[in-house]
Structures are given as C-alpha cells and as structure tokens.
Image 1 (cartoon, one colour):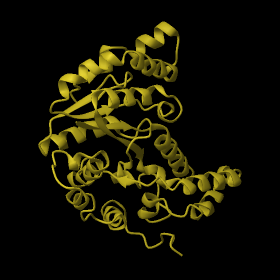
Image 2: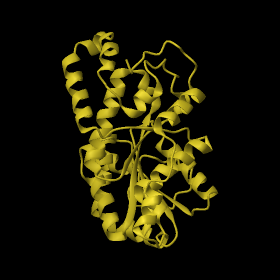
Image 3: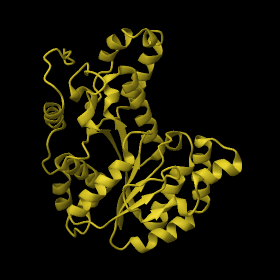
Image 4: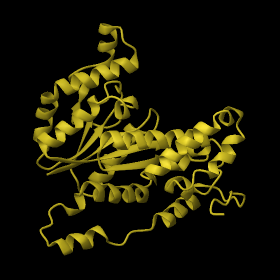
Length: 302
C-alpha cells in the first residue's frame, strides 16, 4: 500500500514550492519521497523529479503543433496523459515498494472541477496501483483580505472537493504573507472555519462592484454553507512546525498513520481520536505569529 498527495491549486498558490518544501521535510523525518511532475508547463523545477511528464509530452510542442493557447494545451496534455496512463504506471511501479508520492499537477483550475481527464488519471492510478492519496488544495492566503475573492476561493474549493472525490485538505498557503494586501476584516479563525458568511455581506456592499451582485453573492454563500464541507488549515512552507501540523492532517486523511499497524479495532480507534490541538487555538497561534495586533477586528461572534 502506497501513500501520497495530489497537490493542486490555482496558479501562484505555491504548488511547486510546496512540493519542494514538503519533500525536504518528509525526508528529514525519515520517509523516502518521489516527486512526480505532471505539469507540462513547469519547465523550471526546484526539486529533482522522479517522473516528469515532459518526457511524454511538452506543452510548447502541443501549442505549436495544434495552434492552441496555454489553457487548451494543458487540457490536451492531460487528455494525452490519460490515454497513455500505462506510461505513467510503468514509471511509478519501481517506486511503489518504499516511496511516498507527491504529484505536482498544473494550476489550471478547470482541470479539477470541470474536466474529467485529471480525475480519471488519479482514479486509474489508485485502482491499478492500490494508492492511498489525499488531495492537498492550496489557496493563496492573501485572498482573505478581499471578501469577494475569498468567496470565489470557497466556491473553487467546494467544486474541486465534489469533483475529485478524494480525501481533501484545503490549505491557506503563504500564511506568512497574509496581510501583504491589506488587513483582514475578521479574526483568522473566521476564514479557516468558514463561519457565518452573512458577516461578509456588509464588507462586500462597500465595494460598488460587489454591491451590484449582492443577491447572487448571498445565494452563492448559502450554497457553500448548505454543503458545510469547506474549511482551511494554514501553511508557512518555511516553518517546520507549520509543515508538521499539515503532515499530521494529511497522514490522518489518507490513512498513513495506520500503516503497518496490526491491532484491534479498539487500537485503531484510539489512534484516530488521539488528542490534537483544537483548530480554534491553532488558528489563534498562527494569527499571533503572522498578523499584527489590531483591536479593531470586527467581532464575528456577535
């Protein structure tokens, strides 16, 4: 049984940096890691890839040969990979004995909530190679400073979760830069826990562009709250404690913490419910570390 992560997220969310940092951290704690680059547009990798999709197909060649733009070219590449899944399977088989896998996917979000080819690739690998994978969906933390962008990030996260049908962890990446584009309207736990989104309406109404679509925004927020699936954890990829906390969540979601355990159901239950930091207090610690003190936060609990 092989474990790993499917790393996804919009362009600029830090997927490649995440794969580089995560692979280094996992090696430090004693795991053999293989990073698989499945982004044909990523020709400058900071990590050593065990498998590179460019050995199969290159985005530049596709765009030139078929007169496609970057988006259409990426869809074509994923479709080509799906049709040649045996190539990827043969490359992965030597790694299955003792490696933890990190799949670095393209940043084109349509691949993960609209098109089926990327999902089909993952599902075929899970079925054929008996993989245990979790989706790690990165969202740039600075989007929290703009209520409209934050709602968009929530919709993207929800759509991706429903489409991929994998154990799923949403991550606010670059948490150390969260206030680079302005102060947050609420405390950090409001954004990580995805609390009552009606509190955002007042701030959205202050933006003339958002006020025009007030009714639409309210309906979209209601959809997010009705599903009640989306929440976030935070990540500073340069901070070992932050990466370690995320690894614990991922290991629990894909079952890695149970690997190699030959015990009764009672023992498994003890591991599953072992004490962890409550999310509220973890978010409070992150806020204290990365955000300036500001007594003027709106009280979202009133």
